[in-house]
Image (cartoon, rainbow, N blue to C red; front, side, top):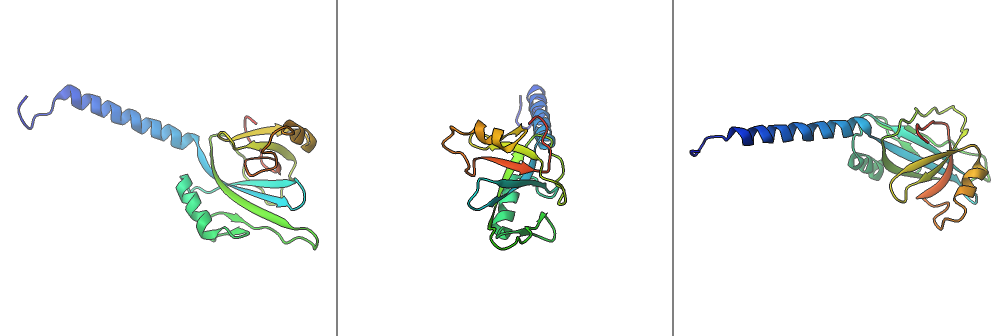
Length: 167
């Protein structure tokens, strides 16, 4: 082979590899979405309410984290992106909001600001991310009774008004 010539089998292999890598990236992009997980706990209790907010403009965890660093102080209220406002409660109740960026391949229904928080999930973020649905809060708490991380930012029971497929 002379200088400047392209070896056809090598070029073909490179193109095939490039196409396969593009397909893997496309499947990953279609399969997973970035969510802003908002947890609101009532101080002094293990009660947590959660929302999973999805924004089409946020496509990777780095963008979500940048948004959090810029905006998350109490309620998240950005005119262009996530919209989630914590309503002020009556005197005597202290709410503690916490936001975290997650990526999930599960099908998660849209959040409804007026919906009733009737779905109970055990959220486990210790080794990846998993949601396990329970019929009632006591069953959820019993499932994690012996865990050392219970009621932490990585393992908690929560009430949601969204459904999560496979949970």
